[in-house]
Amino acid sequence: MPDTFALTILFIVICTIGGAFIKGRSKDRCLKDFSGFAATLIKNNGKIIWGKLCVENSGLEMLYKKLYLDEKDDHMESSYILYKNEYPQIRAIVRYLDDLTEESAKKHEKILQKTAHPSWSSKLVRRTRNFFGTVRDSLLEVVNLFIGRMKTMTPAGKMLQGQDKYVNQLQQQATTAMQSAYEPILERYIGKKVVLAITIDDVKTEYPGILKDYTTEFIEIMDTSFKASETDKPRTADLIVPRSLGAVRHAGE
Image (cartoon, rainbow, N blue to C red; front, side):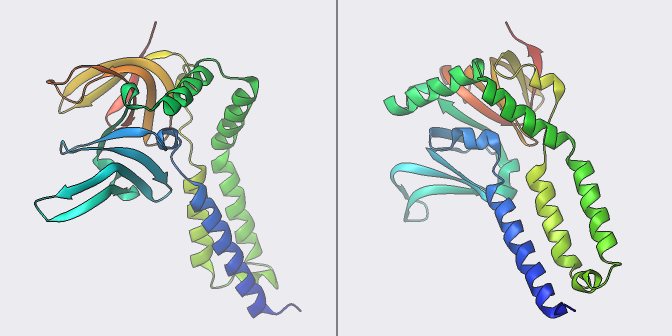
């Protein structure tokens, strides 16, 4: 009979490694699109941060072009960090085209063309991802049923006894990583012109642009006209906003 203690340790290691792998790869797709580009982060309290956006699974960081002296607290800063649990503080993330370097501008143009004219392989990847997103609940139900059956078996049952903490943790991480915001209506307009309606403090503003992508938390459009405040001049930009504030309200022309 297999060593129950050794099997238990092996199971814990597999759960830990599997959970870390899943968690480490679960970055929001919209935010990833802006990663590596100069961007502007606008928070709900009106604070504006400029820098090069770096996205990780645990949050995002705005890397300043040069050191900034915080005269109030008398220290130097080189970046601003916003953790994932603080994402509700985001009002918008803006990528102004006139802020891009020549290299970034070329990369941006390729992304725009690929979005408007996706290849068959890009369409296949997206359809595959949406398919698995659609069936994820069924898959997780099967996993839960399998684990439940395993607990009643010997020696596998002994291996799982007392390990609910690790099983639940792995299932939670898998659920989070597999979450999909698949919406058939929005899928039809990926790469096409739409009108994004943003409502802040009961004031609605509409932004025509090209729908790039959407997730459970954010929605992203490209090639729109945006200004951070009424005193600013409109500038051509790409835009990411929380879905709690914005929604595609019209198809565009």
